Amino acid sequence: MPNIRVIGIGDNVIDKYVEEGIMYPGGNALNFCAYAGLKKLDTAYIGKFGNDCISRCIKSALFDLNIDISFSRFLTGESGYTKVKLKNNDRVFMDSNKGGISKETPWDFTDDDLKYISKYSIIHTSVNSYIENDLVLLKKTNVPISFDFSCRWNNKYLKKVCPNIDIAFFSCSHLNKSEIIEELKKAQHYGSAIAIGTVGESGSYALVDNKILYHPAFINGDTLDTMGAGDAYITAFLIGLFEQLAKNQDTLFDVNLNKLALYIKHSMKEGACFSSKVCKIKGAFGYGKYIRGC
Image 1 (tube, rainbow, N blue to C red):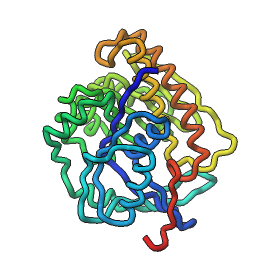
Image 2: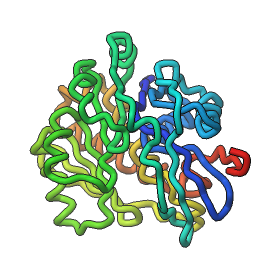
Image 3: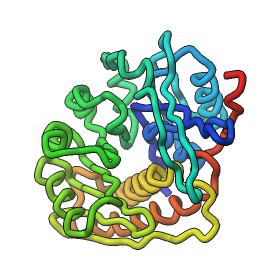
Image 4: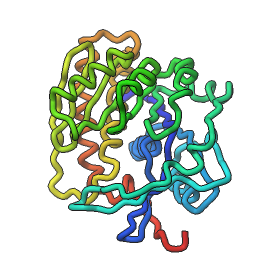
């Protein structure tokens, strides 16, 4: 397959499993990079790190996965964390510090940052990254931008973000099919070329050129932990899509729409398959450490 390079820009946290006393690295943009690293892709991450043991745990995992963090921000303050418990092997978020120091510090991307970012095939970021006002600048790199809205959006937010991104992901388990399609159409109307809605064990929907595509989930009979499943889908989807584009010497900006629909169908399958596999891992991608002493 063609060599593609991916970069995640945005949130990193520690997920503290309070009932077990173990914490795991996580965060949407970070998970994207970790999963790409597990797939041995050339991967970079730009994030904001505090100067505490949480940060050291996260950086250690990224170092082990050979992910470049040299353009990250290394700050003084508390790193982001969430408190989590498992209910029937499904993760339930209890509390968080909303990203810690990351929410208080602007990105202030420099020309050197943008030059570095422009070398990659795809940028992925998220609703938790405090990056909405920087998307216009990132778009100038001419690198396609993927954005995960999770389950937190409204019309005003879509109008702000979608003109500056190319691929929009939504967690839609709280919506029925007609509502999912309506939201995906809004994202496309406001500017996102592709919109994807994931529905957990009910599969996923995609909208491209006003056409709705569907792919079922792969049901995993021995699920251990659903943490990171949606991010795993996103990662495998994006890798599958951009490998197909590169293999056929297309780009997201000039591909024939009929071909794009075929690429997306392939990528939805890749996302569903990898997401199922990740559910067998504790935490988003492992690398657990005891909370005690941190």
